[in-house]
Image (cartoon, rainbow, N blue to C red):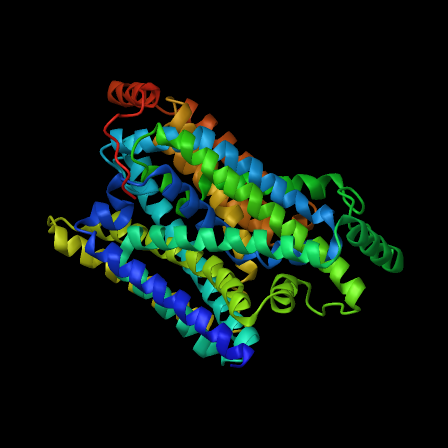
Amino acid sequence: MSPEAWKTIAIVAYLALMLVIGWTAFRRTDDLDDYMLGGRRLSPGTAALSAGASDMSGWLLMGLPGAVYASGLVEAWIAVGLTVGAWVNWKLVAPRLRAYTEVARNSITIPSFLENRLRDTSRLLRVASGVIVLVFFTFYVSSGMVAGGTFFESSFGLDYTTGLWVVGGVTLAYTLFGGFLGATWTDVAQGLLMLAALVLVPVVAFVRLGGWGPVHESILAADSAAAEHHLSFVAGATVTGVVSALAWGLGYFGQPHIIVRFMALRSPQDATSGRRIGMGWMVLTALGAVLTGLLGVAWSVQEGQPLDNPETVFLFLSQVLFHPLVAGVVLAAVLAAIMSTISSQLVVSSSALVEDLVKMTTRRELSTRAQVMLGRAGVLLVALVAGAIALDRTSTILDLVGFAWAGFGAAFGPVVLLSLYWRRLTAWGALAGMVGGAVVSFVWGRTGLADLLYEIVPGFAVCLVLAVVVSLLTPQPGPEVDAEFDATVDACRRPRPASAGAEG
């Protein structure tokens, strides 16, 4: 059997497994709360792996190893920033957000939570946040489809459009019917696959290259020939460059597709176990990605095969190290990273469209079946628009991914933190901060200033200052808001319910 046939078998088996998981989730979805939040019954492990898989995408398996291969450990600062940011997110946001979203009228989306938490009767806060989520995630989903089309084109020689529709179609199928549970359960499988690949590839490469001595000598030889410093964290770095890399961690507090996993936990107390599992996964995968880049340098020296495209180092090592069937499984890990992020973003985009925009303007009470069908229609609509955008390969969609991370972090991050930890926050303060942070991030990111400092830093700062100042200048929230704030604090202090099951 040819190597291509073996790889095709692995990919087809992976895609079939995702569809089976989506169908299983479909049978467990009864109402809109199930479709959007999985009925708030995710176990800590499921929530942790799902958050990690939906967060990292193809960047972890291709972008980070490629950057380290090209420039060395100086590119690893972004991984450090993301790891610290993820830990703080689990520590500060996860338990409070899980408790508060239930206390605040059982909110199932971030926009609805902000409206309920701050008693915004104008609906401006919910509309603005819903539009921000919908617009940016449509482009995010589109960029994932572009990555999927490119993956099939470069790995299997398929037509770009065919690859795009394969990735988009399968992801849409299990998300359309399985909703949040479908996206979450497939995320778990995808997260485990990513972990296995990022442990297996560097370990096998390390052994095949002869251990640390030959690897170290090969990297030094490459540095000597090209006047580079692959093993240095500071060579070629600037203070603002390191700050910009570390600042990626600020984005976590405002990423709807990540923090929605916290809202779906069985209880606030489960956040502790979730943090330990999630951070263990993240440290192992990030370390594996960095080591893959460095080992790729050593392999290129020993074999005399430098790579034209550094971002293919992970794919290249998987092809030369393993049997084609195993290599196909590793390729499936890359596909898993892409699809897990698309599915999570489809669900959040659908919730913004249905829960925060359509239902809000519909006076008639919708039946449970109608709400779920509306949610599925939202997923389909976002996917179709994203697919249409992705068909234009000359568009600058991929350039907007970094902006979207900064935009979400700057618009929502400070507002989410203040809503959870500062009872004095008002609806007008949150609205001013959200709009100000998004505008500053956008303008900064479209000028030469972005080359000096990542736009999330000024955007985050402006959002924080505006939210605090405007809140202090506007009427203080009523006693019912204080009562909910106190109830949230109490809920986070309670011991974990003894009856909590193992669902999710």
